[in-house]
Amino acid sequence: MRLLILFEEEMKQNKDVYFSDIESITLNNLFPRWKENYAKQHYSARSFHDNCTHLEKRILPIFGQMKLKDIKKVDVVFFV
Image (cartoon, rainbow, N blue to C red; front, side, top):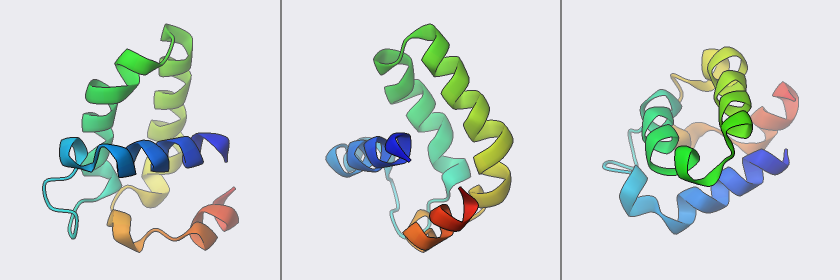
């Protein structure tokens, strides 16, 4: 849950880097940008690998096709 909160805060602070069209972007669209533009520079090699693996194997299959604006906290809480 902590990772999600930090991720959300980063997105809010740097929305011009990550969002070209905030109304239609999906988590699948955002993930590669986040991975290259943020995660590589801010995480250790181990944390980068672990976080990307969790996202790719667990989170993206469930939320990947959803638009970011449609993912609600309650969805994440039920998922966790």
